[in-house]
Length: 352
Image (cartoon, rainbow, N blue to C red; front, side, top):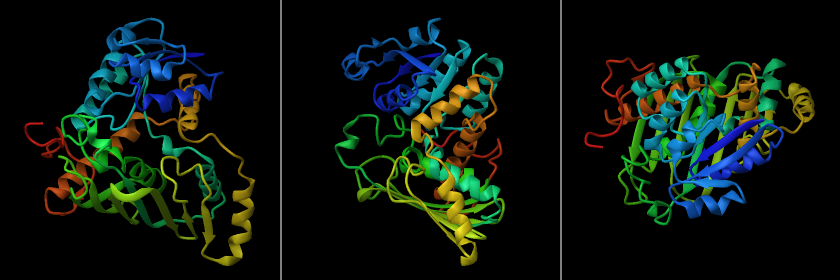
């Protein structure tokens, strides 16, 4: 049984629901938030506190789950690793590749492991894609299109740290499209180059709320990503075109792998086999329960699909390249980003 302290009662409520779906693996023992009333509103009898550092240093907990505003992710992760704890940390894990270097060194020196949160990876559709790949029915990645079309208004940005460089540490490409971009890298391979156009068109905020992005992948595949926070609803749509098959998600956001996908063979003579394989894949834990089950297995020493620090580095590198390209009027920016790059130390504008 892994004993958990959750730091932050906002997105922490969704993490708590994920832990409660896995009662044989986790015991949440504390909800910590500066706003004790918010902590109490989700605790349902659990102990609450407003002292995060005391929670990190308490011997009672094996795992510290950091659900705090982005500017606190690196310092709190470093403190938890220094205390020898396992750590789960929400996105974005860091705001620079230099900070990723710090986290990597801290994890190497700690008895604990740091698990970045990319819960979109888990669900039946992911298992179906993996089964089709194992059967040789996908072939090479060719083209992908991503849509992150969500609705965010003044009520959303009434939270003081949102929409600011200092608090949220970025806009839509950091706080909203980051999961879709992680899926692209996870399923299609590493990013080789990025062209980016960013804009603030929907809300009077400091950071971007719109993006038009194009990616060249290391294997030669191409991809586009369309991002807006000015849609009428929240829609996430992913279309993956492989050599032998096209896979298309449903439109629901937040857990794209936990819905029905369409898997269409390019050669229709293969469609029967595609349908047989995908139908045989059982239901799977999706979203936070799927993510957390893999964390538990990794802590237990099992080789598995847990998200690791290298996955977060790829994500932070991609965000760095996006901001670098946008500030160069959309010019291509190659990955990996070298330490001498102007944004290696961070993408926050001067003064933030």
